[in-house]
Image (cartoon, rainbow, N blue to C red; front, side):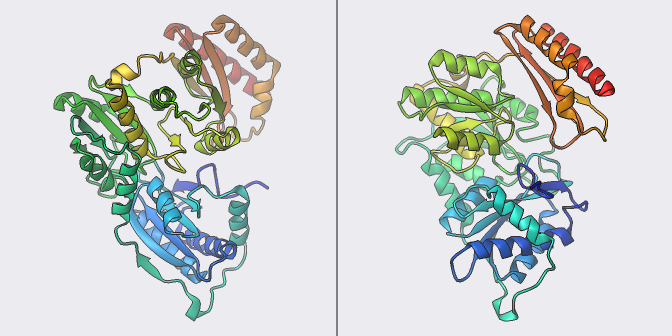
Amino acid sequence: MAKRYFGTDGIRGEVGVEPITPETVLKLGWAAGTVLSRLNHKAKSKILIGKDTRVSGYLLESALECGLSAAGVNIRLLGPMPTPAIAYLTRTARACAGIVISASHNPYQDNGIKFFSSDGAKLPDDVELAIEEAMQQPMQTVASDAFGKVKGYPDAGGRYVEYCKSTFPFGQDLSHLKIVIDCANGAAYQVAPHVFGELGADVVIIANEPDGFNINKECGSTHPKRLQRVVREEQADLGIALDGDGDRLIMVDADGAVLDGDQLLYIIGSAKQQQGQLKGGIVGTLMSNLGLELACKQKGIPFKRAMVGDRYVLAMLHEEGWELGGETSGHVLCLDKSTTGDGIVTALQVLAAMLASDKTLAQLKQGLEIYPQSMINVRIAEQDNGQSDIQSSQQVQQAVAAVESELADYGRVVLRASGTEPVIRVMVEGQNWEQVQRLSQQLADTVKAASETT
């Protein structure tokens, strides 16, 4: 059964536009409370709610509170808190679920809601479908003496800070490093400085003054230019940029060069392999750079590709029994440390690799050659639901085969239909930038022509 509201990462959209409206979120809270409390075997269910720093978080938090209370569920408010912190605290607080109010790296006008189960993992599809089904039913409140109560969560931030520090090697510290941290004016603005500062680093903080509107605005993992500049100005050893909800990470070396998720996976995986701690191999996605795959092959590290989306990376990790995977965007999963992507924890694993090897970030990434990629979005007709027909057409398949033949073993072609808009993404990857640009445009033109005749 197709989902009406839930996507690959919860429910997300522009605030004030369905489904991110007070009315729908109120109903969502009631439906989620009803379903999750039914699945919970305790006398009284408890659900944690955390959010990022968007101004709309107050509105959506209140709507969720009302719905959950009407379903007879107790609520614990965490306030601004990274997404992975909410996953961790849900598990340790023995709550039946955790709710995150965030639109991750999107601008402040957007917001979203996602859920974690009692074990800190994303809700299974059948539970999301049950919540959607409940949303179609009339809303009925429990008796007045059974309403859920709302309380705060004392020292939630401090508990998460201690957890993050526990993922760093005991007995070691960061006292010899100067680190610039970009908090994206987002959910990690309070906890991230404490984690690295308490581990001894000389910390310079930027983008840590959220006002409800500046989350991700020219800062964070999607806009690293300011971080690059400050790292050079401060003569820092490295920079760390989180996104608005703290589950993504990019890093910057002392020269200001950006390291994306592929490079961070390579560094962590290589260190774990050297220490005999790598369980299996690494899971990337269809969009992971070919250089990562070839570098892993060179080191004898198994590498597999999942569909784009951390949900699919996580599913493949569980299927293979592996622990390390992620996306180029910097959403990295270290399942030996966390149940979900965690920017702070990922950064600590990279820093641990630096200490173990006595190398800089620039030195650690040297074994990985990033191949040039060119991505072109080909827009097709709104009413066209035959994206797969376009991709499988003889015209397109012949064009793909010709491009692959020219690239030989030193390139890749990926055609991927967007799940949110009428677009086919054409990606070509190879060793030569001019060749990659030429071939991607050539293939995009073919896809466009095929869409007009399909």
